[in-house]
Each structure stands twice: as C-alpha cells, then as structure tokens.
Length: 627
Image (cartoon, rainbow, N blue to C red; front, side):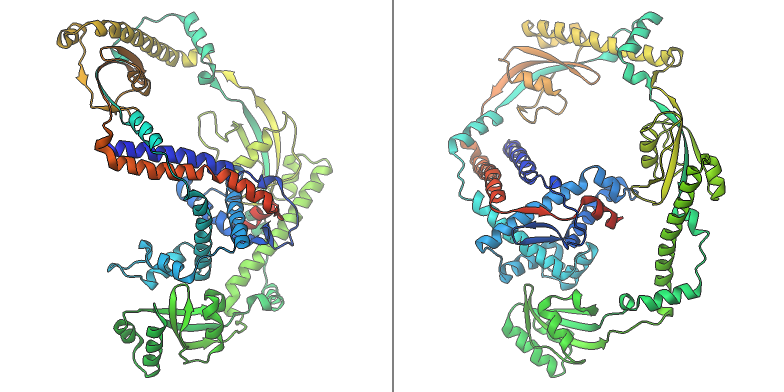
C-alpha cells in the first residue's frame, strides 16, 4: 500500500511541476521577440547575460539527435522546427539565461570544490572499483559532444541555477493535515465481486439490408471516405542533377588552397599527459617525483591518483587554467601543479606540433569537398535562373525540363500526407512534404513559382497541380462487407452493455453468488484491494470510479474494449495512518517540493520584470545554419 501512496504523491508532484514549468518557460513569449541581426553574435540576452549561437545550436543538435534516435535519422532540422522543437529548446535556454542573470545580480555561484565533488561522485564517471575515472569522464564527454570546458561551465551553471530555485522552494512546509487528508483519500481500498461479459458472445444480427448500411456509412463517413488526392507534375532541381555536370580542375583546387590558407592552417597542438590528484600537497609531491625521472604510471599508482594520456590537443581543448601554461611551456617540461574544478593537475609536455600550413596533398579531399559544395551552389543557382527564364518565356514544364536537361516527375494520385490511395508513402521524389504542401496550396491547373526546398536535400522545384480528386465516400459496394462487420460489432457491444446493466440490478439483490453465477453463465471473482488512483489491473476506469461512490452491496457496470463488466462492492478498507508513517513522511517531502514549485511562477514573473530579454537572430537563420 505504501508504494501506491508513494506513487500517488509522485504523480501529484509531477502534474503540478509540469503545469508550472510549461507556464514559466513560456511566460516570456520568446518567439515573439525576433530581431533580424545576423551579425550579432548573441542569440539571446537577459540583462548582462548573453547566449551565443553556438550554445543554441548545441542544445538544438542534442535534442535533434535524441529525436532521431526515436523517430529515425531522416528527421531534418527544418522538420523538427515545424513541430516546435526549436521554440521549445529556445524557451528552455531563455529560462536558464534568466536564472543566470538573477544569479549574477545576487552574486550567487558554485565553488570549484562543490563542482569537483559533484563530478567525481557521478556514477557515469566511476570505474568498476567505484573511484573517479578520468578516462571514463573524457569518453562520456566525447560521446555526447562536449569538451571539458563546456561540461564544467554547464555544470557550474546548473548548480548555480539549482541554488536559486532551492532558495525559493526549501522554506516551504507541507501542512500535516493536508498530507493526512490526501493519504486517507488515496489510501482507502475497496474489494468487489466482478464478472465480465464478452460482446462476441452476443447473438449476431442478420444482415439489415443496404438502406441501414448506407445510413451507417454516412453516420461514420470519416472511416469510409477516400481522402482528397491530386495529380502533381514536379520539376525538381537537386544537387545531384547539377553535380554530374561539374568539372573540377586541379587549377580550381589549387586556387581554393591558395585563397583559403588561413582557414586551412593547422593550429598549434601539444602532446600531453597528466596526473590528477585531489590536493595541492600531493600534487607537489607528484611533480617532484616526475622531475626525478620516475614513471608517471608508477607515481600515479603510488599516489592513488589518476593518470591520463591526453594525446594531441589544441589550445581550445583545454581548460583555460591549463591551456595558457601548457602552451607557453617547452617540450619536455613538467608544469607546476595547476588547480581546476576537477582537482590539481600535474601536466607533462611530451611534444609540440607548431602551427603550420598543411601540404596540398594532405588536405586535398577537404578541398575537393569544399569546391564541389561551392560549385554545386553556383550551378543550382544558374540552373534555377535558366529554368525561370524558360518558363517566363512561355515554355511548359516539360519543355523547360528538356531545355535544361532535367526530368519532370509525375505523381498520379497523392494525398495531403504524401501517400498513395493504397496508403503507401510516395518515394518517387525526395522531400515529399514540401512537394505536397505546395501542390495542395493551389488549384487544378495552377503552377507554382520556382520554390526552394525548406530542408534536405536542398535545391528548387516547380510544381503543377494537374487534377484534383475531391474526398468522397468510398463506393458502397466496395466497403459493404466492412460496413456489415462493423455494424454487427457495434450492435453486439450495445447489447452486451444493456445486458450488463440488467444483470447488475439483479446481482445487487441476489445474495447467493454461486447460484447467480450458474444461472447466468458467468464466472465471478473477488478483486484484490483496489486503490482509487491505481485501480484494478483488469477493471475499466469508469467502473473503478463508480466503486468509490458505492456502499457495500451496491452494484455498477461499465463497458470494456470487448464487452462489459459488472461489479458489486463487498468491503471498504480505510487507511490506518499509524501503519503508514513512512508514507506520511514521504508525502510531506513530495508535497513540500510541489508547494515550493508552485511559487516558481510568481518568482519567474518577478524576474522577467527585473531583466530585459531580447532575441537578436531569427529562428529561420539558425535552422539554415544547422542544415
């Protein structure tokens, strides 16, 4: 019982929290504050706090990656944005920025010691022996696309924001009388005698004739209507259509190499190893031992420290506390102990790879891809211009396609979902969503202007809506058998529900359960004690609800998915609060948390009045950068 009560309080807490967060995160109307200023580095500012485009992109990419794991890799950034994913991520980021501004204003932060304790105790970063593993820490970060700097910054921000939220929540006390009342309400249990009736056991009615079935079809028209379809002629210009015409010469590649020397420059890198310890005294001893020529692995083992081979890293791949001294030292140096949020680091400079201009051969593949991308964009633009000119001069879609060595794709019948009349997805052309949207936005005989694909694979298209077949009821003869089966099933269900009501009335007055069961050919079972919120495993929700309004001996019935069920309440088991002290304490804590969260709305409202929030870059621009 205590588990059920605990689940009730957890459910109550979740409902309250969900409602508060939805309101709070949407309170600022971030999508209504768009300002086009692509050159502005910040996407959002709240007071003195700035959120960069890099931070927004990372958050959106992380959410996109999560959605692709669920819905498939074909989900594009543009499609995700249509579902509101980008706005949701943006609102969450804005809410964090608001709390960051408040933390800055109130001078609230998180110490290195607190961050170190949190990270080194995180189960995701622990080795099999339960100790912090530097290698596992780095592997988890790499798998999730984080650098060490980014992760520590994010962790510090999360801890700071949590402190602000806790300062609002923690003073709240949950009244004992409220907890007791909720526990009595939820903890009461009821036992009933029940039996089920199956609709399939009811008599099958004779065929009612065409008139009845025709009326049934009209009454359920949505189930027996063929959707509107359209015949579409599509002239696409895709990257692959122009790429086959590209001729990339060595001169093109060398010209790109010469003109992009700065971008191709390989930055300076250092080959590093390190030993990470918890305190400065141990770090100094480790550094001294290394300078004596002792093996780093042995020194780390003797000091119960963590040895890591960091390999070749760039300046931006290290924490600022480490980057400056590590890139200022000479090859072979052992740095003096350096403190970060993770502890004390003793870093060894094993090798230095100076910044250098790579040879052409080393980056040729990268250059080929870049030049191909540039020329593809140029070729797409030229092809689209030529296509527009041909159509403007009076050429039909087919004539314009022939002039530009393109092909018209005909979709004979496609519905608004991009499916054929047989319910199969159209695969004759990519980005069907864009195609169908444009084709259904115009009348029969109309032709769209040259339109750019909103998402992948990129390129342009022109679409002509050749014919429109309106949504119509499917021919009666085609669906008669299905109509008859559905009508009979419906009538059997209606009959079983009425029979259940009749038997429920009789069951309320018949005290001999065995005789009643035999006379009515049913199997009667006694339920396990039923809770108000969790109900019984096989009982319909309406029947459980009814049972908590009955007195012992009273009956009720309710429909099920395949019939009906009858129940007679036998006993009521009230809660003895003395038996559930643990549940009461658990309930107090969870209600305290929920009540504390209820203060978040006025708190966030006050914060939004104190700090000015602005957005400087459009959602469309950010999505284009992600595609």
